[in-house]
Image (cartoon, rainbow, N blue to C red; front, side, top):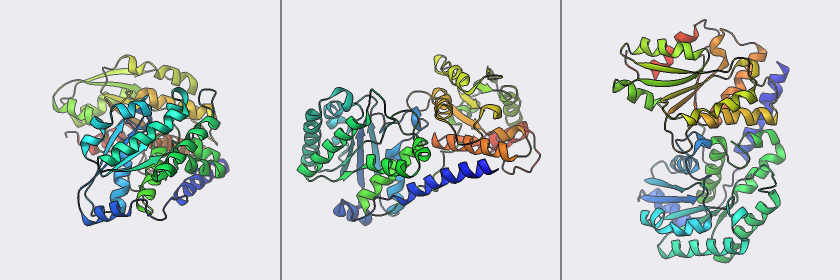
Length: 414
C-alpha cells in the first residue's frame, strides 16, 4: 500500500504541477479574443509536423489542435470557434511553406499557430529555419491572419536529437518572434518546468522519445490556449470519445463479421459477449498470445498487429503479473506505451482499440493489484483510449458480464 501511495502521490503531484504552471497572463491577441467573445466566427489553423497531426501517439482520433479547440471553447463558451489541424508527419518548415496556401491560408484563418523544429533540427540549417519561419509569418499576415509561434515540446535526450540542439532551435524561433514581433508560446520551457519538479510525471507525457502522448498534447493545448487568451483553461472534463467502438458498431449494423484481436481471456469472451448483446453478430477472433511473456515480449508481439490490418477491434489486456506494481521503470513505460502504439493504426484511427483493466478478472483489488490497475488506467488515458474497468471493485461480477454491460453502454443492439 505504501508503494502505491508513493507512486500515486508522485504522479498526482506532477499533474498538480502541470495544472499550476499556466502561461496565462496578458492575452497575446486581445483583438482576436474580443472577436471570439463577440460571437463572430473564428478559425484557427495549427501548422506543424507529426506532433501536430493525428497519429497513434494520441490514439488516432485527435491531437493538441483538437484539444486547443476544446480549451478555447472552455475559455470562450459563447464563441464560434473552429480549429483546423494542419500537421503532417515528417514535415519541416520547408514542407510547411510548400503547403501553406492549400492547407492553411485557404481556410481563411484569423490565427495560425506554427510548431516546427523536431524535424528541422536534423535536416534544416538553423539559419534556413529562421528564414522559413519569417516567411511563414509574412505570408500569413499578408492573408490577414495573426501568427503564434510555438516551440516544440521537450524530448528524451538522444544522439539523433540532442537536447542542446533542440534548445538552439527553440532560441532561433524566439529570435524570429522578437524580430517579427510575433508572440511565442514556449511549450519547451513548460515541459522543462515539469521535469524540474517531477521527472516521472514529465516522462509520462511521452509516447516515445520525441512524441507526446495525449497527456502531453493536453499540456500543449493548455499552454497555447493560455498564451492566446491570457486565461487559464481546463480540459479536466474531457474523456475519450464515445462510443469507443465506432468501427465495431458499424460492422454489426451492416451485418458484417467483426474481426477481433484480443489478449486472453478476452479472446474467449468477446465472441460470447457480442452475441449476448446482438444475437445476429458474426465474430472472427484472432487470439493475441501473451501467456508467460514479459512486458518486452508482449511489446514485440504487438508489432504483428499492423501487418494484418483486417481488424475492427483490438482488446489490450496486459496481464496483471507484468504490469508495474511500483514506480515504473523506463523500460516498463516504454514497453507499455509501444504495446498501445503498435495496437493502433499509424495515422487516424482505422480500427477500434480498447484497454481492459487487470481488475476485470478479479472481484477485489488488493493494495498490490490496485497499484498495477492505476498504472494501466494512466497509460490508457495518456493514449486517449477507453478503459473497461469494474464500476465498483467490490461487486462480484464475472469478466464476461462486465464486458457485456460495457458493450451495451456503447450502443450495441439488445
